[in-house]
Length: 283
Image 1 (cartoon, rainbow, N blue to C red):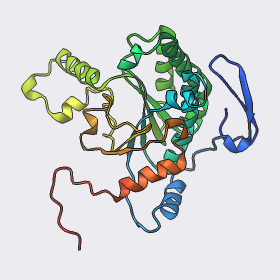
Image 2: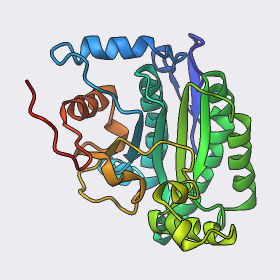
Image 3: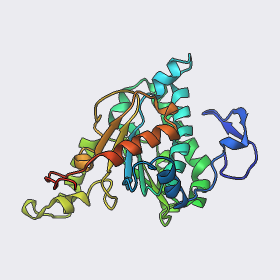
Image 4: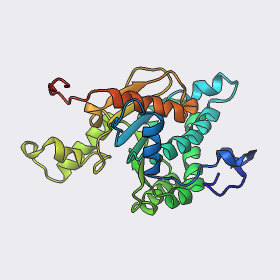
C-alpha cells in the first residue's frame, strides 16, 4: 500500500500473495501536520474550547486474535488487520500534532504463544518494515524501537536497526515500536546499563535513570489506550506511565478507527491532571 498517490493499490498478505485491490480512498495521504490540530478542535472540541492534546500516546493493541476468531479467520489474520490499522491511527495522530505514538506490538510474554503465531508475528514485522519504510520516511515519521533485540532472528534485527537509522532525522511524528518489550525487563536492562557505566546508586535520580530506559530521550506518555476490553497494563511502560491517563475500550484493535481515537482524545482533554497536587478551584 502506498501513501497519497491517488491510485488503487494492492495489499499483500504475510505470504506475499495479493489481496483484493483496495480503492484509492483507503490510501493514506501525506500527513497534513498542524492543519489536523485545527480540524480536531473544530470537529471534536467545539463545545470544549482549548482542550489539551497528549504529546505522547501509548497503545496496547489488544483484541487482534479475538477479532479474527469472531470472523472465522486464523489469529494471524487479526494481527495483519491490526497492522493496517496502525497506518490509519498513525496518520490521524500526525494530523492532530501528536509527537509520539508508541504501539505495543510484541511483549516478552508473547513468546509463550503458539509457535506458528509467534513466527507469523516476526514475519509480519519484517514484511511491514520492507513495505512501509520508504513511505514512512517520506511522510516525516521517525521510527524507534523499544525492547530487546536478543531472541529476534538476525535478519529482522538488521531490518529494525535499518528502519531506526534510516528515519532518525525525521521530526513530524515518532513511531515507537515496542517489540519484544517488557516493562520489568526494561527496568532491569536500564539498571544493568547504569551499573556498567559506573553510576553509583546514591548518584542515581529518576531523571538520570530514565535516560537508560529503552525510551530514553522520549517524553513520558500522557495517555495510555487499551483496546479489547481488558483492564490491565500487561507490563507496558510501567515506569514511564506513572502519571499517564488511562483509557480502555471494548473495541478490538482492528476496529479502533479515527472516531474511536477521537473519543479517547476527548476523554483525555476533559480530565484534570493533578500530578499529585491539589489544584485551586476553578473560578
